[in-house]
Length: 253
Image (cartoon, rainbow, N blue to C red; front, side):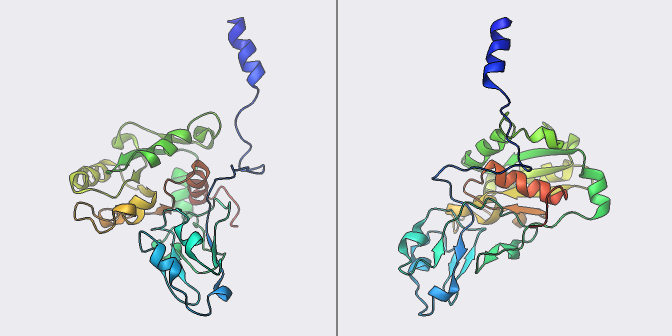
């Protein structure tokens, strides 16, 4: 017992101070890209040709679809003018799919739910995770949100085992043909009113499986979506940022 207490004392307080304190990311973290249209006057298409998911519409400036982006850096490496660059900005969640199309360093972040919904979900939000054909990458990041470092439950947000005990569902994966019916039944089992959150490029657009006849290209092909969280996979703080914005627990910027 004393050895256990000594270990806890030695480790100290491990939960990060987010959202009150600054956030530090590792050097290899790839956050929200920025697009500098002033560097694309010649209409270069190198970035669009390099993108494996067709996330870039060439132009001056080019338009980048964060919902399709795999954050693979292929466009950054291919652009001779350095018009597209990566940042360490983890804030990317949006309420509308159209808000994920960016052509500058700015984007419209997720707006909060209406007052009635915030009263229902603001203090206690229970979610059922549905893995609709994912590779387990996004699912692993969801698990990480619950470890002591991020401690999702301190915000009153928890994952539950049954959709009948949930306020909504969080979907990962491109919605494969074999999982579509299961997703529909899970959605129907959640009592109304309910929320739907799509997390990861696959759940937003199909991700690297875009064009496959075995998938339905994202969650909104099957159920209505209230929050889109980009990433491949999304960082735990990107997921947390989106959830807290939805509940009006963060500044608007």
